[in-house]
Length: 199
Image (tube, rainbow, N blue to C red; front, top):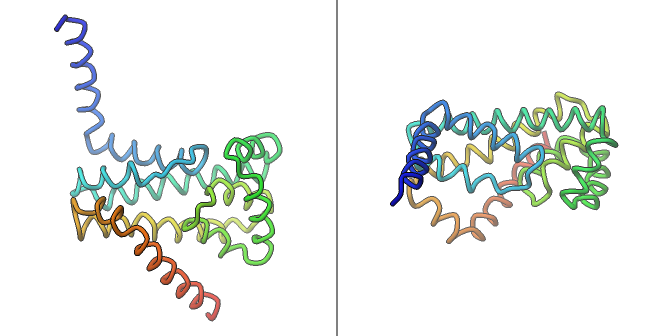
């Protein structure tokens, strides 16, 4: 092994060591959640669950960092939708290939704004559609914020509980029982919607 290879490996090793510190982990989670909410249509759980498993002592801090990053990104998207939809929002929607989803979502916002935004957290619709659409249609900021907060708190908190209860088996459980989990989640979601609409 030549000195260049050794130097590169030492550099990579020191970089990962710095990233493995508490503050760095929480920053990575915050930035990842922010990017997922604003421009990157990525399954954030692929980053979140392994980090939760590796750093069990930081489990709930990781959940809070993810929630904070998501809310910051959601408010950024809402602001763009409100003030700069045509110049910035439309290109993002087009890049995501979500023009039809945005059209449908705008119609749903007019019927029930809170539930429309809340449900995006549990559907394949990109959250960027919800944030930009809510801003563009001038949805009440407090209603929008509460819908996103509740939706993402249930999502990230649910992952945190799975890691807390099942530890290393969480990823296998998610893969093996994804259809059962989806069915159960939809059932619980239907019950929640029923309770909210009856209240």
